[in-house]
Image 1: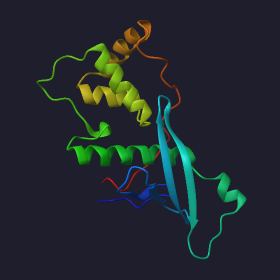
Image 2 (image 1 turned 180 degrees about the vertical axis):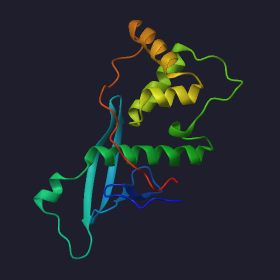
Image 3 (image 1 turned 60 degrees about the vertical axis):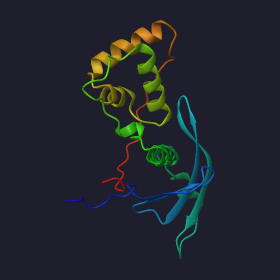
Image 4 (image 1 turned 90 degrees about the vertical axis):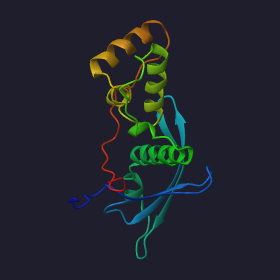
Length: 170
């Protein structure tokens, strides 16, 4: 049973055919359609273009412009682009990959690569890497600490990903 979307929940996402096309996002309770282009960086996705299209009878005023959840829009767009890219390649998206029983134990370089990928998509690093490798969060912490001491990875963000409920993937 689906719960009723709350204000700010992602209710619709459309990704264009070409990589240069913006991602179209609708949020519950917002009288706008957001067209978003993002750039993946090592600190997470960043908006490079944002267009707001007001619904009929509404206008974009300064207060509404200040209330735009830009960070959440960037993370949502990046994650949906990753899902689409993975679907076209026939692979599971980074946020949905899980370890298989017969995989070799994680190497530091592989764990660092997965951590950087999760970070660039705006996913929570420890739980995502742990799920992908089939290890505990404690193991991930220990391995990432070693990698950081060896200079293989920089500091990971302490700021959590924005809270979002994506009703389009259920």
